[in-house]
Picture 1 (cartoon, rainbow, N blue to C red):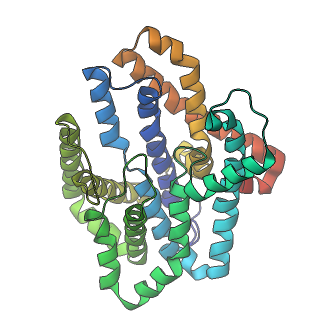
Picture 2 (picture 1 turned 90 degrees about the vertical axis):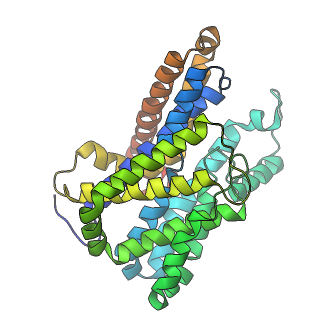
Picture 3 (picture 1 turned 45 degrees about the vertical axis):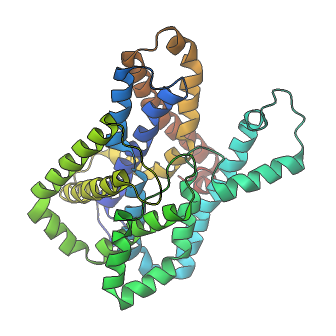
Length: 352
């Protein structure tokens, strides 16, 4: 493998790590709640464990987006920056939202026999695009688009005040993202812009950052373990996140930023020895993000009768694992087919 200023293998591999965590955040929790609820202590503990590990993994994508901007994209100019975001994020988001709105149309209107009006369909599509509701996880794309739109302002602040940048990066410690089902409240944008700015700061001082992590990696690992323990305990003792601030989201931000720091450093130490499967996941990360819930839904719909007959924690854990594998493999397979058919235009369709 060769390295270049515009392509760092460990940053690409980190995308693969990030998408594994995002899929993990949905694989077991959707199997639990799309087939029932926390009907036993064992299922509750399974949910709490997967939430402790995976909840908030979109922070990884916000961080890496900011890092890549400072490290690579800033030098390419604003036209190239916005053109790439429109081509690689906005267009596939529109195309897949069009498809998913059509695919779930009967569920959206709760009418099994429906004569689809093109006007009504387009109105729903437009609403889904603005609100990110074509799929349960698409709320992140409007957040991402706002992050991209404010990037010129953030880049200006970065050039004039590192103190202001650091303060913005600390905002997620005191302003929490909004919980399900209202993901797109103003505080969510502040939370993820804070993570994006932290990534920008890290990218600006990347070599110093790696030296810092190398020196304090044991303490960062302690922070990961400590925040994970406290997060699980909050679930165990029934803490409910409410309002503009949540202790849980502060802990998630600390946990995920510490994990991000360690993962980036450890991956950077294997720059020329990274496994191909992880690099491939990085290449297909956006396609997996866009498509994975479709395959989770297929597994859940196919297993409803089995779960209804025997709703045990062992079965839920097994089917959640099947969700995880099917979501990744199925998404990559669809992306490969689209690439085979549309070649270089595939990224505009599925993001890969």
